[in-house]
Length: 115
Length: 110
Image (cartoon, rainbow over all chains, first blue to last red; front, top):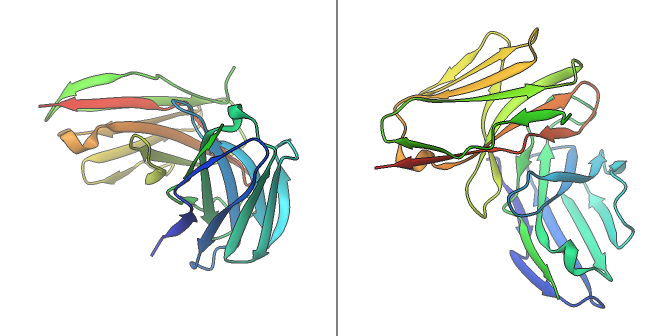
C-alpha cells in the first residue's frame, strides 16, 4: 500500500483565518514533504521533515508553519495568508530521507483558496 | 537555465501512436531519475523510475544518458487514458529535493 492521505480535500479561508492541513502515511516512511503547486506549474518544494525533524525550509514565509507530531503525521498550519497563496498543497513521503534516492509518493492534495 | 527542462507540448497523437518525450538536466550530481504522470487537478503519480541501463514497463520505456544528461520516455500504442501531463523528475545526490521539469502535456485522441 503506497497511500498518503490528506485532509481536507478543499479549503476556503479568509486572510485573517487560521487553519491547518493534515497529512498521514502508515508506510513507515521516515521523510515527509510539503509542496505547493500552482495551475499549469510543477510542484515546488516547501518543507522536508527527516526523522521528524525539519531538514529543509525552502525560504517559505512564516505564515506557513509546518509541524511533524510523529513519524506518520505532518501538519501545515496556515495564518494570515494572501490570495496568491491559493494553490494545491501536496504532501509526499519517502522511505529514506537524506538523498536516499527513494521514490516520493504523493497524497491527493488540499486545494486551498484564500479570499 | 532551468535545472530540468522539458518540451511543454502539447503533444496531440491518435490512439495507437508511439510518442517520445525528452528531458535534460543540468546538474551532473543528479542521482535518481523518475517519470511521474499527473492528471488534471490530481496529484503526481509515479510512472516509473529510470535506470542507467534503461527500463521498460509494458508500453512504457525509459532511457537515461548520463553523459548527455538526458532522459527519455517512450509510450507505444497510446491509449486515451494516457492523456495527462508527464513530469520529468530528478533527485540530486545527498538531498531530499526533487527537481521537477515543467511537464509535457499529452493528449491522445480517438
